[in-house]
Length: 132
Image 1 (cartoon, rainbow, N blue to C red):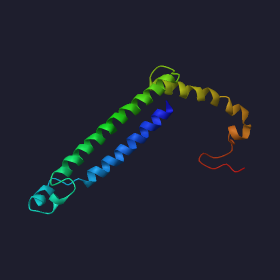
Image 2 (cartoon, helix red, strand yellow; image 1 turned 180 degrees about the vertical axis):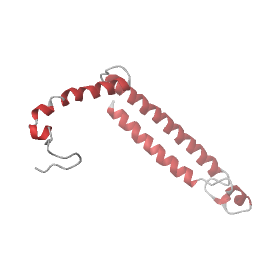
Image 3 (tube, rainbow, N blue to C red; image 1 turned 90 degrees about the vertical axis):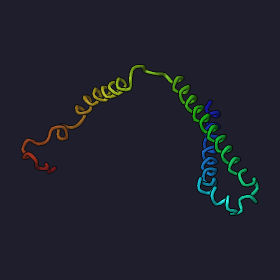
Image 4 (cartoon, one colour; image 1 turned 90 degrees about the horizontal axis):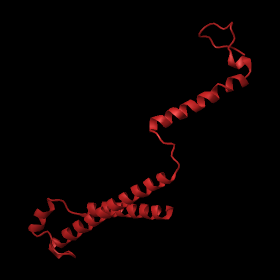
């Protein structure tokens, strides 16, 4: 399953980078006015309007691949969490259970420390720093 997830991630990154490149190469809406006055676009590889159609179609294909790979990654992530043992309950319940476990362990720790560390000297004035 991990191999498929890695392949889908690589496919998603390639689709994203390709889509970014294609969007940057495309002309804006205002570029059509210059092409109509003979700016030399008709001598291109795809003709006067062929490149716009090709680039827009290929961008749409890359967007579809990106969308499908995102759905695939969501499916793989969900199936991976479904296989993992779940404690049940909500996130807040799990956080409350996790917070109560260290509190019981913290009650044992102060008894193991020396008395000088646990209880500060009684002769120290409030707000002063005790000197050892």
